[in-house]
Amino acid sequence: MTPGPPGGQGGDDGARGAGDTVTTADPTPEADRAQPRLDLRHGTQRVFAHLLASNAVVSVINYTVWFAITFWVFLETRSVFATGMVAGIFVVATAATGIWFGSLVDNHRKRAVMQGSAVASAVVYAASLALYLLTPPEVFRDVTSWQLWAFIVVLMLGVIAGNPRAIALPTLVTLLVPEDRRDRANGLVGTVTGTSMLVTSVISGVLVASGGMLHVLLLALVVLAASVVHLARVHVPEPEPGTAPAAGGAAAAGATEGGVAQAGADHGGSGAGGVDLRGTWRLVRGVPGLVPLIAFSCFNNFIGGGFMALMDAYGLSLVSVQVWGLLWGGLSALMIVGGLLVARLGLGSRPVRLLLLVNAASWTATMLFPLTSSVVSLTAAMAVFMLLMPFAEAAEQTVLQRVVPYERQGRVFGFAQSVEQSAAPLTAFLMGPLTQFVVVPLMSGDGAGARAIGGWFGTGQARAIALVFVITGLVGLVVTLLALASPQYRRLSASYAAAQAAPAPAGGPAAGPVEVGVGTAAGLPADVVVEVPVGLSADAPTRSRS
Image 1 (cartoon, helix red, strand yellow):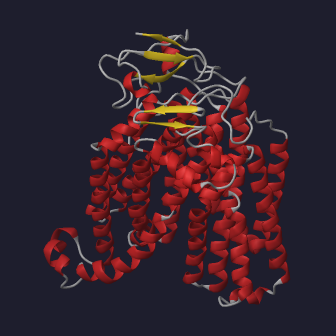
Image 2 (image 1 turned 120 degrees about the horizontal axis):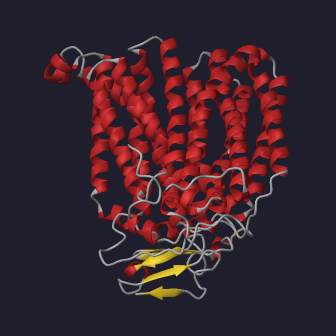
Image 3 (image 1 turned 30 degrees about the vertical axis):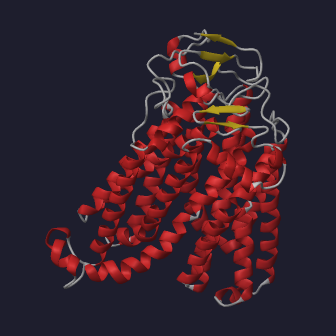
C-alpha cells in the first residue's frame, strides 16, 4: 500500500477515452491545483477542524471506557469469558446499529446528532456510575451476578451511543471541505483514529489502576459535558435534513456510468424519514461497483478476523508481555504517521486503485512475515499494515463521498459499517477453535503438516499459527489481485470519475467548475464535455463544447 500521486494528477481508471477532453475555468496556477492544501484556519474548513477535534476527544473517552471495562472485568473476575463477551457486545452492537444510526445522521442536522450522541453517552454513564456506587464491590467479583452484567451492558450502551459521531464525520467532510481536498481531510480522520488507539489503552490502564471504574466514569462525564458546551459554540452551515447542499454536485446528482445515483425521485421519497433500508440498498446497487467495494471490505474484515484472534498468541510466543505491549504502542503511532501522510500527499486521482494496491501490499506483508519465526519480521509486517491502513480507510471514504448523494451518505456509511463490521467477529470466533483443534495437531509431532514442511517451516503451536497467517495472507492477496482485474473495479472507477464532485455548502469554499460527465458516461456524444460552474445545480443552464 503506497501513497498515490499528489491529488489532481492523472485520470481515473476506465473513465476517459482517447478522444475525451476535460476543460476548466479555474485560473489557479497548475502547481497550486496539483497540490491543494487544507486550510483549517478559515471558513468551513475551520468548522471541520472544530468538529474533528471534538470527535477526537469524545472518541478517546468512549474507547477509554470500553478498554477500562475490559481491564476491570478481568481484574475483578479473572474470567476470560467475561472479557470476551465485552468485545462481542461491542462488535455485535456496532454491526446491528450502523444502518439506524446512519438514518439519524441523514434525517437530522449533523451537529444535533453529535450533540445528542454525547448527551446520550453521558446519561448512560451517569446511570452506570449510580449502579457502580450502589453495588457492593464483592458482588462485581462474581461472574454470575446480574449486577455485573447489568453494569457491563449499560456501560457498553454508552460506548455504542457514541457511534453516530463516527458516521456523521465523513458526511461533514463532504459538506465542509472542497472536493479536491477531501482525501486529505479523510487522512486527518485517520490520524485521529491512530491517536485514539495510541493513548486509549494507556489512559484506561492508569485510571483503572488508580480508582477502578469510578475515575473512568467521572472523567467521561466531565469530557462529554465539555464537548456539548464546545459544540454549542460551533456553527455548522447545514442544509435542511434530507436535502442536498445549495450548490450542485454529487451530493445533489451524482452521474455514474451505467446508472445515476440521484437524490430525488429515484431515491428520495421514502428516505425522507426513517431507516429506509430498501431505499439505501437500491441506492448502493445503483452505483456501479459500489456493492463489490463494500463486499470486498467485508471480506477483508472476514479474513482479518483471523489475525485479530491469533495475533496476541503468536506475538507472546516470541516476546514477553511487556515487550509486546510496548511494541503495539509504537506500531499504533504509525497509524498517526499514515494519516498525516494522507493529509499531506492526498490519494491521487484514482482512490479505488489505491485502495486495492494498499490491500495487495498489506496482504503480501502478512503472508511473508510468518515464514520465519522472528519478531523483526513480525514488526516489519505490522508496521507496513499500520502505516498504510489510513490510506485504505481514506480511499473508501473519499469514493463514497464522491459517488453517493449527500443526503443519503449517513445511511450508506452506516450500511457499510454494519456489513463490514459483521464479518470480523465471525472469523474471530471460528479461527481460534479451528487453529487449536485442526492446524496445531497438523503441525505438531507426527502430523501431516509437520512431516511435509516442518523441516524448514518449523513445528509446534506457534508455527501452526504462522501457517494460518500465511494461508490467510495468500487468500487475501489473490482476492485483491482478482478485484484489480475485475470489471466491477473498472465500473466503480468510472463512476468515481464521472460523478460530479459534491460541493461545499453555499458560501463555503469553492473548488472551481466541475464536470457533470465525460462522453457517454453522461449520455452525450463521446467528444462532448459539459461543465457546471460551482454554485449552480446540475439542472441550471450549462455550456457544452465539442
